[in-house]
Amino acid sequence: MTVSEPDALTAVADSEVPGADTEGCRLVVASYEAAAPLVSAVTADAARRIMMAPALGDFMELRFVDMGPRPGPSEDRSPAVRLIMEELLAPGSESGRNHLAIAVADRSAAEVQLVLTECANAPFPTTPPLRLHGVASVDDRRSADEVVLNASIAIAPSGAWSHADLVDELRRHANELLGHFAAGQQGLSRAELDSLRADYEQHVRRELGGEPADDPAAAVPDAPERPPPTAPPAQPDILAVESPQPVQAQPVQAQPVQAGLSRLPTPDPPAAVPASSRVPLPRWLVHPRRWRGKQPEPSESGRAEAPRIAGLAYLLITGDAIADDRAAGQASRAVLLRVDAKIATLQRVAYLVRVLQGDAETLRGELRPAGQVSRRDVRHQVDGTDFAAVLEEIRALLRRDLARATKSGEPLARPAVVLFAPDPPLADSVAAAVFSHLAQEASIIWVMPKEAMDLLASAFTEPPLHVHVLPDHEDVADEIAGLLNPAVNAPAVSPVTGDADA
Image 1 (tube, one colour):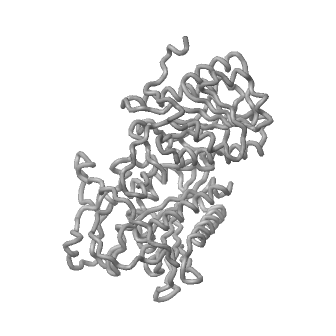
Image 2 (image 1 turned 30 degrees about the vertical axis):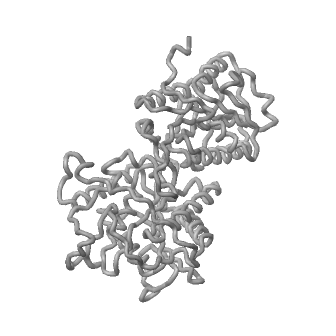
Image 3 (image 1 turned 180 degrees about the vertical axis):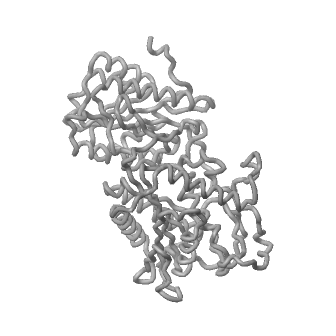
């Protein structure tokens, strides 16, 4: 996970409309809280490995869900499934055509079967095209033939899953999904995905028994944030359930409702887990803005970390649409992804990143927390044929972001623009003038092949206080992260005004 958007920049985030020709698949991996720290780490590692495969990285998006405490044998699995559906349908990262998939991991294949069955029976007027998969250590089903429609369950050959084996299984399943959807299954359009969310919202509101109060936040308060349980000591099986310990009941997003799988009435639940007739709305229905980025990851110590100042960073690859060097472009994309991952780890500043694509007329890029950029976000470069116009658009976009970000009066690290330039752009008097103004408002970092550095015009290297030219080498991402450290970049609490143009 990565740090969520700083409060000073919450209003800055906006979403872009992807092209109708793009396709993507969201795979939600879920497990109960006993194994959640380990399975979450496996999911993150699998996502990083998948990102390094060009076709698969462009297509797949992995997310993890902690389903909360494991229910008893006769208890309802629908609260766990609501958490899965909430993440599956959460806005963000939509493509032109969208596919949905769920993978449930648990030691027991019988338990996986119960959750997948509940997912398959999710209450929608029209059944969404879900692909269901399970991962289990022990096949304790009454019959191995008990398989949910369109679902598969992978059983550990040795009766135990190691970290590496589980990462490989998720990657194998991701490749399987890519092959399946490439065979011709039609994905959901953005409009169809929005309709599916509306159907789900109506279902949840019906379960509430009426419309929510005027203040949704007051009617359905968020469950208190709680850090995931400490990862258990190394075990031969990553999905093994910890030894039962008397744990005080803690609230989750939905309290389990005591009911049999047939939803027949059963006795009231124990007093330790009070029954509730109200079903919480998904967070993205109550507080949509919170779903623009991932939730913050608690520190290992469980203590609140010192607040980090906010920052803005624009990343872009410039090039000429006519003389495009594909090999150099691919290398720049790989470096850009490493830079995004590195600046996400800075301890004193929380950067929001825009990866810009298009040209001066269609310059675009979604603002998101550092560490969430995927290959899909760097698929296209910025056409630098009219470099002066591109710089002017960057400057205008930066001013709008800064104007919103500084309304709160909170300190803001000096914004940065990182330009990956396999071929240095041509310098004319207009481009040189616009670049000079931009360099007064933001730190500018050029990254290019060493042999191309001498070709960069001197007009694009001044003033030396705010412009850096780095050769593309193995550790350049660390070097860029060091330059973006707030100890190097002086805070800027207000956007530059038009006086700079005088």
